[in-house]
Length: 267
Image 1: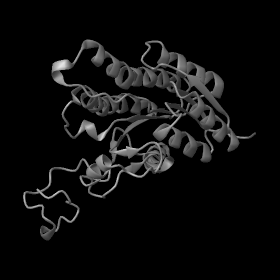
Image 2: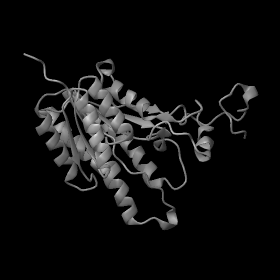
Image 3: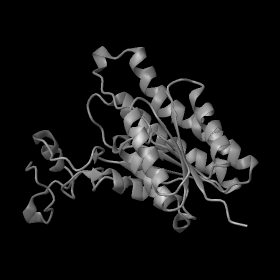
Image 4: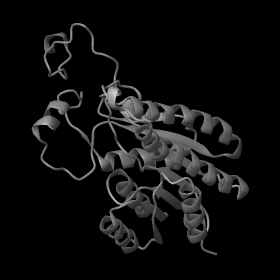
């Protein structure tokens, strides 16, 4: 009897990191379900690409800010795929607000999409994995904003930090069932392909020790690794994929002559 293929649900996979992850998993033999919000054309292209690899694939339009959406999406994926071996929560919104202009609605929007939906998806997936005795994997997407402080990112950065902390609690609770929970924290990442950087991006590149932004496929590589058997003894960690951007503050003497050649800004 042929062994059933492993399965994965990717929350937010029409473009960027989610798309790259879904395709990489499909290439490794996973059947895929994924969600999208507004980019129907890109979602259809992802669907066709994965099916073109000979894998089953299902696509759901969903507004993850809605309270019932996480449970509904996970239930549909389980019904369509037959089981769920991995959940990857990629979808989120990036918002920056000045403190004097911050509203309750602003906070609620980012919280609902970036944090509440993540936890509810993980809870629904974990319930299925526990009941079916599946030693599954859950991967969350944080950000270097969880570690580096920027003006106007008090909501976005604060909730990304919360994801890192919640991942640890999830991992501790679910380890008794053989379920691993890990997190990936990308830095500046190109999610629309290797476009020529504009002047603002070039200025940012100068702050990244490896001298460039990351690519969506590189973040996907980290996700796929954490799901793989090669990472079978890893749980509750956050893997930074940021080219060194979130490393501790540089030494006071950070000139190239002091051996810190990656420091290009000139303080």
